Image 1 (cartoon, helix red, strand yellow):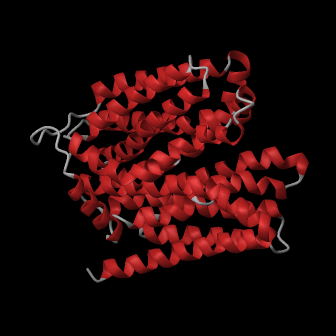
Image 2 (cartoon, rainbow, N blue to C red):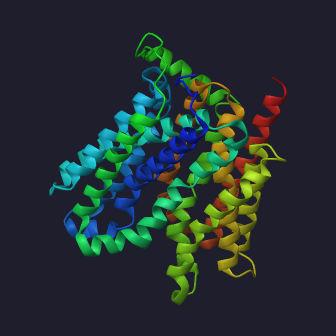
Image 3 (tube, rainbow, N blue to C red):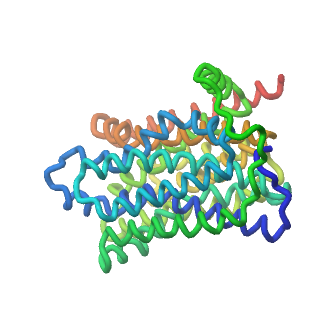
Length: 392
């Protein structure tokens, strides 16, 4: 175990809720650019397609270095890694509030991508470690909502805040929130257990560890399924609104992430009393596949999309719950969370351009067939890994 988790119950709960708030700040590293993206296009009208890197650079860092972060946070210490990433993220947000050139802003986003990656690896690993066994599934599904909640808050409150105070003020608020949370968590989180200080393995060992994690039906399972979730979640929020009635398009688009959050929070914890997390994940992909199929049938697109995002909500909550359920040690959990970060960022990076390309060339039918194929592959992959676990 990487930290001493012997804390009073009330302090454990406080630490877990603070870590979830840290997750919201990590998601805001995406949302603060993604939601008001049109305003950044207006700020840099000559940038052309380069402006897209403001959003995708953070994903690119995670897609390349996700597993390495899982190894690093174990060697450095979960608490130490988390606090350093929070301070680094705060510094980048505060710096961004005074930057005026696109080039330096892009450099800051690369550094911020490193901060984001460590946050989404260390925080859920700490939550799993601090959670009482009976509440672990609930706390992990709570963590799973951080991205959707952050985007919803940014849509509901952030745009009005920007209209009133401007984008630099939003960056300052984000940086200040990270510093405030870091100062509180510094006092609340248990200290890292020192095992000879900071220990980082050589590069050859890192490569071997990454390969072992990817091949493992325990460490690798949550991340493999997570790839197919992230390939579609954000991208469909951008693509599906074109199928909805124009007068209700904005409302329905805002509701869909909430459907997934409700499914994750209210249904996944009771389902996990009867089913293994991977079974809930497979059920979620099955429901999402039915919803996708409904986009081609007589069902209203609104109902089909709602079922699709309901299924993705089950996948969302159960995937994070699967990490501690399948892995006992903090080191293996950090590796599993690192792989989820890597495949998740890869999915976010590729999902929208790939599905837009398919939709443009093959229309709605091609789009639905591609989505269905991804969900079926995810179900088959989880079934295959479950059989491997049964024979080990």
